[in-house]
Image (tube, rainbow, N blue to C red; front, side, top):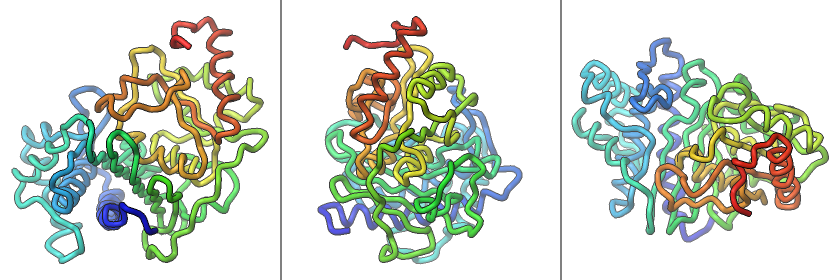
Length: 359
């Protein structure tokens, strides 16, 4: 792919490939060192910590003037020397001192913690890298679908996206049926998806070269639409609203049922679903930037439209938490107005006008 961001894309792909290998090395472990986050937002594993350290050290070495935003912080490692050593040893065993292009590791366990904490920034103007080292940590713990998400945002605009789905077949784009948490690639190849704004989205296996990448076809507004969601696993959302929207649109529900947001965006880009709706229980609940930035670009580059429930574009300058938006509505361009209207109709019918913004 020839674009002004060719260097950024090449480096990010090489680093994400190595991160995917690291995740695959940790995946079979029964004990992945999972600890609950202080903010009660789910578990974090040695894989999450090690991958964020790898992503940050490598991309910071290549682009030292850029800002870095990541999901994890090193507080648990600083208070648990045994866990810290496990993360450090994981980096050494899976990446080590091998001479690999663009791959850089922290120099010590202390430097590793500092590197992870280098991502505790808020996004703003300029060049900002955003990392989700493992999206779908709960499913990763079960050896089910998960993803690694890397995005470059420039002045609030998604510009480069690289996503690894180590358990998802790259041939899914040519297959029928839904993708679920336990849709495991029987060949073990896994998928790498990438995009540069204005230059399309592509997929290949993690083991292949860039020359084998296939451009993803345009999103099509089929009748009926094919939704992707997460059903009955997230307390933050309104399953009854999502089901009613599907009924209003005359589509199957839940369709593709995936816990992680990044695999959901990947399934939309690959055409195994073509619409998603997410309505939080309260207007003061908001998404996190690392679950969406970059991964959304994959769908947009095949012709998808992504807005919030109010029909507004997603504001990636709002901060680590996307406080400028409420929920998500995504569909092919020609179908998006009908999906958005169905969401509004259901909220009014269910007496939830408190969840509708001023339109």
